[in-house]
Length: 313
Image (cartoon, rainbow, N blue to C red; front, side):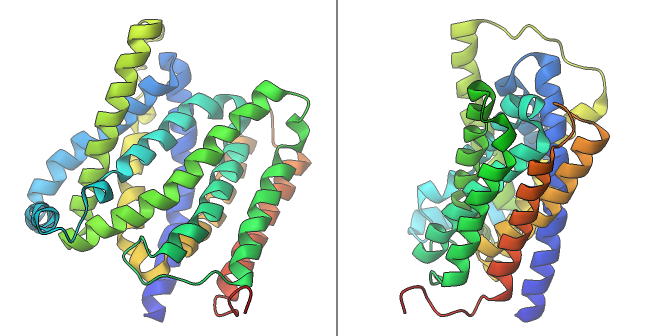
């Protein structure tokens, strides 16, 4: 079990790097097409199309989908366990709506702060496939440090309310990620493989985003931009498939909070490198680095003292 948990932490870190890259790609795609929701629909659509080809070809995928249907009929899997893709769609939409303005680093800090604080409640409730985990002093301290990290990271933007307000979107999206990871883990357990869970996630997310896109077009009209010719701008959906598959596979070993916080190191490192090499809104300021450092401290506090006495004990 310890080896599986260590492997899960390593995979989550790699997924974090991929998520930082996905945020930059989807943010740039949103700029090129002229709308964040449109970019999210494209990203999820690419992921869904890829899965529609892969899942029928993989034996565990072919067996997994009927198993999920049977679990739904038997009541061991509830219908709302299949709605994790709604929050996944929201995350991708916030990438397109905010990254080009606030940068990948601030986006990442806000996202993981929302994720880590929400994960406390999700792990305590036992919503995921693993056993409920107690609220310990270390876990609370880690979550509080994440919130402080957001405040520090956006400190240089306090005089720009409109820009600062955009950071609220990834904060809310991060809170949804914790729930998404938990219920996707349930679908993975029911299907016996990550493939059906990932396909269900992308199918639900694409439908949800399609509905939002239809409303946006009805209200504001068709996006002003054009589809860009560069293939790499459509890679966000491929990275999304990798991210969801990893999360669904390892959450039963790590729990939701440890999964999320283990990904932070990768996300923060990837985000800072991207904002240094290809700045979205100026290079990261000193406070952004300070916020990132606090997030890494939060990871250490939470993961190195997992057996701490429960809060209030």
